[in-house]
Structure formats: structure tokens, C-alpha cells
Length: 261
Image (cartoon, rainbow, N blue to C red; front, top):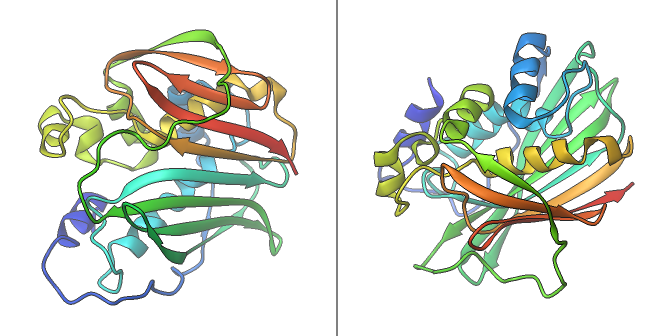
């Protein structure tokens, strides 16, 4: 069953459990080098056999979607807002390594705008997690405005201007498997209150890491907070001080930080 159909079926009225389900079945993946090269092109990474730190998120995405669109998940997947992401890369991964993917949900908690939970994914090599990603989702309980609290710290000054093309939504959907119509369709975007399609948050995060690629250590963690969506097309500014980074347009779109681990 396709991702879009699973998401649509999750909207059907039904009795829902109060708690998060167990883990998705663990499975093996083999990196398709042609797919990796296309992902690198779309997100701005150099073409190498080394996996970008955001790439295992794409490998784990189908399992995450199956988990969130299952009958025993407490919320419909349509309407969930990806508000933050943390990636821990304990060492670089290469395309030739066989990976086991593990995905589970945890930490259902209250939030001032509704309820939050985490989808945790791990890429395992020889029985040890070499990569871990935590995607935080918000299920809104009431209408809100704005893009979340603004950072109190002085943001890095913009050091580059990016022109984000109208095709970014469709191109990233093709390599990520995330075909949410708010990213690919003007009509789909309007149904959720956006005048035109918006970029995937994980594309914006990946584009930032691509800009920082030469400075990244072999083992690091990166935390990002998604703020205002990036409309397509758009012109945005990217700024970094070497560890903190952000993307701004008419307001803040993303704020992040890299730390060594």
C-alpha cells in the first residue's frame, strides 16, 4: 500500500488507543548508489559513497510512515507537524555497508499547542547503532499562529543567499518518498492553509548540512527546530558561526546547531 493511501486511510473515523504502539519490524536495507547520487544532487551534497547524515532518515521513512499510519497509532498521520529533529552520527556510513533499520515511537507528552511524540530511527551495523535520528511531531489541539518561539540568542549573520526553486518540493518528494501534497501541489497546500507548496523541513535541514559538509566532524550530533515553512519558490539567507546555523527569509525558517560527540 502506498504512503499517500496509508496517510489518507488514517483519517477514517475509528477508535484510537491512548498510547503509542510498539516498534516497527526491524529490516535490512541496501543503499542504491543511483538513488544516493540523486539525493545528493537534490540536497546539494558532494557525490561520494559516504552517506550524508540526513540520508538514513530517508531509508527509515517508509517504516516510520507504516508505524504512524497503522490502526494502533493514536493520531491520524495527516495533520502531524514535524517540529524538530535530532541526528546523532557516531561514525560516517558508506553505501557499501549493509544496514539494519529499527524504528519505534516514544515519549508521548503534553505540549502547550497539543501533544508531542518522537519517532526514533536507528541504522545498525554489526549489532551497534552507528546512526540515530529523533523526529519530533506535534499534534495540534487548537489553532495557533506564528512559527514558534523566537531564539533569544543573536542569530548568525547570513553568509549566503539561496534561491529555492519551485521544483524542490517535487524533487525531494521523489528521493525521500514523502509525497505529502503540501510540498508538491498548490491545491494540496491551500487545503492546509498555505498559498503555495512549501519545502520539506528535512530538505532544508539537509541543505544546511550540505553547506557545512567540509566542516563536519566524523562523529557529531545536529539539532534543528523547524519554524516558519519555506514557500516555493523563495529566496532565503543561510548563516552560520561554525556550529550554530539558521535559515531566514521573511521570518525564521530553521535554527540548528552541530556539536561533536
